[in-house]
Length: 385
Length: 136
Image (cartoon, rainbow over the protein chains, first blue to last red):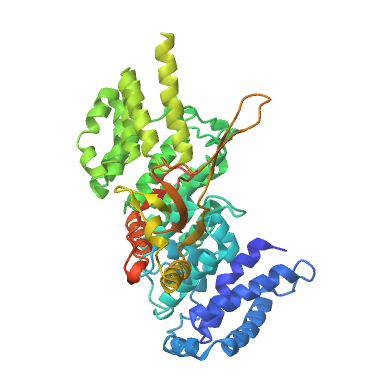
């Protein structure tokens, strides 16, 4: 069975049902059930017209769903059943669904879950596995999200910035399970980029590709983190880097800059260096300067301090950390960056303490292990001197 | 979203509150009300899409450790009168924020006890670590 095709069809079929007057929530339920049936039967008897098959089966399920719903539920739905202002016939249903699923009224976690199911075509079980929660919990999260957006006007696009944020979360947040959520985020962002002239959409797609290209080098054979400067660059996927750079260049040419384009530009400069020592830190620092001005985000200022450390030396980098304590407080990354700069400045004892403080504060076991090991390395080095 | 473990205690917390003693003085109705409250919490968390797990632990535990090569495990039975804290069980939730985890913990702590009054038990809230590096 062609899983990719099936998943591409899901949002289209939901779109067909919604245009025929079904509420989004009910249409999504029906298509999800049709999807499960497709998983069961297509491997033996693949249909000639998969899209038509899904529409027919979903339509049949729709009848069942409407019949079996309690009267209370039906009363609730009546309000939402007002004829949705359907999208124009030639409008892309997939994109409209994406905007609906990323409605600003949803919490980020709800938008992520709903997007993966209604637009990504993943099953509830797959999404639950990816986020390490019970399937019943994920089912509730999705069904609440659907109720929340069911009254929303189907034709009014949500804020594109929210959509991009949700896609970025999908890219970053998947942990485990069968499905590669980063690849899924790229697929959805690619869809959006095909329809939107907004340069930040292209910027985000480029950013994802340029990061995803390094996936095989990011962990060693025991699953431990490998930092950018120590990665085996021959493991990077050059085709993805090339595509990311191409998309980014086209976006930058439109001269409407934004945070995702800037982040992508920095990622591209890293990806472009044949070896860590050949990294163009001067250009990277220039991008961070711009990004600090644009966002005012203290975490960006923190990353900028690393670049300052590379361009002007570790003491300058440490000076660039001044004033960030108030904004970042207990954030482990402040201590991790400080430790890195102190180590480069030869202040091993201070670096050791900073690494340990960072290790205590991180909520990631992979980062904790990495930081603890850095501290241990410093200590064993000072012993052997 | 971060996960938090809300650790319930038979005994322990900042003021060493011991809710074991009053518990045995409750009427059957008060115990029913208390248990119904715990089930409600799990149900509402489930409906919110925030529930991960809830478990209760037996009162007594055993300390076990490695006894050395070719030796049996070293086993020490309780009860341990000197133990400052006794974990009773937990809720694990998957929530938007630390503040929301605190809110759920306070709700758990408001469970009814004697005369239907909140028991005010202390819960320890601990974030569950993830393998994935933190987002920058």
